[in-house]
Amino acid sequence: MNKRKRIFAALAAVLMLSSCAEMPDSLKEAETSPPAAMTASVTDEGENAVGSESVELKPAERGNVDTIRAQLGYDLQKTYKNITVERARVGEGSVMPTYNVTVGRAEDFDIYAYADYLYGGRYDACDESLWVHKKEGDPYYDDEPVTTEPTMQPDGKILNQNCMTYALDVFKPDDSKDPLFHLITNTMGATWGTPVGSDLPENTYYPDAFETVAQFDLDYEDIPEDLSYKMYDGEEWDLKEAVEFVEDFFNGEIAPADPDSFSYSVKTVQVKALPRETYGYYFTIQLQDENGSYYDEDRRYLRDKAAIESGTEFMIDNYIACWCSEKELLTNFTKDYSYNLGDTTDSGDSLLTLGAASELLSKKLAPNANLSFTAELNYVLVCKKYPYYELWEYPEYYEDLAVTTCELELKPYWCFRKNVPPNSQNSIEEEKYFVDALTGEIVAMAYGRTERR
Image (cartoon, rainbow, N blue to C red; front, side, top):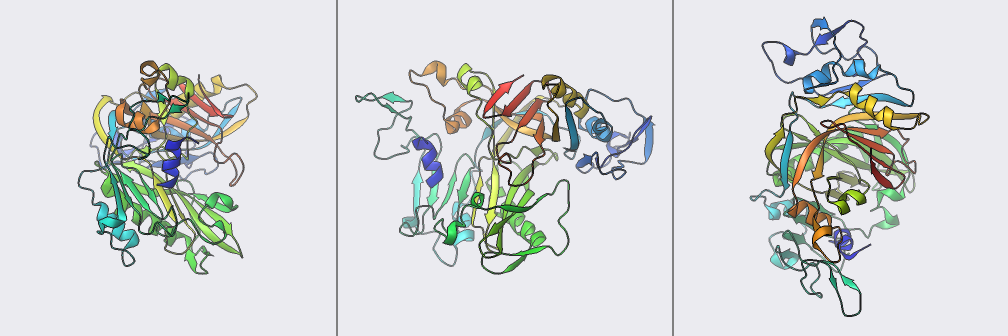
């Protein structure tokens, strides 16, 4: 792990169609409010009516989000020799343009109020002796010279680029307690931390150390009523109430750091088995913009080394998650970036439908692949070009440099992920495929590498 990584570690239910389809309200002459997000599944028949008027269905290969949504159930009925698309999701609204974008925190975000929410009553969030502030241009490591690119040292070793490309604010209320007992926020909009510290009994700070005994994807399934588990502190916590608690935190405390208007919701929750028949909840969080479009939620993309080094576009993940091992307590949480939406470079009127994207994917995979997928139309953050392999004598990839100095855009992709059981060894770095909804290019992430097809 290089030094830069260490600082981050420390500091349609289906509609059965033959010759007609229901017309969504947004396709009528007198357009009404945007329809709700649609999910569809090949196993949930008859739940996905989308309007009251029937029109002849002419399946399209391209269209706007309304078109894609109107034939989602139909597209899920299509069969392929090597893949099965079991369920799919399209966001709300009618528009999904491509944006030029920058990352950045809202200028009026109150870091002191944010710290007070997490530590108030125990520590004074306005006490500057408990804060560390670094400015853009400061060194990451004070014991090294400020360098703007990797530099050869007299001993032959390469010194990493050591010049911050963003400002950093760290609330460290008790350094002696735990080196990870802190709250970090920076001007990229990233934030992570813990109000309790990492030095917890029986290693309960780290959810990956424990088995998943139940999992829910809230876009496709409901949490049963009155389902609760005894948390590590011995308190029973209703799972639906836990979801509300986490969403209130992200929408109330983290969303104000976004320069544009976004909402946060729990996408998945994993119930983890902790010692002595107690449990914890691990939440992945998804982002949604004012148009109702979803942003891809992924723990980590596999790095597209070839694209980075050749100066072509590549995808950057934006992970948001939260872990609660005790009732109404945020054991730890993380969020990568906030977005400033710029001008649009494509209207989104001619995006690939699910059927067209699935057909492209099927043709690129081996005939005997036999894969089952969930498909979602999501925004993905794309870096247009990382130029430093051309500019530096000793080039290296730094993600913070990419997102703060390179041209970025948000593009619609069909995101295909394998349906893997909870806690399988493939559940984090599972096989996944992304189909560019504009160009049809396929990005495959599997077996530890990224390929374009």
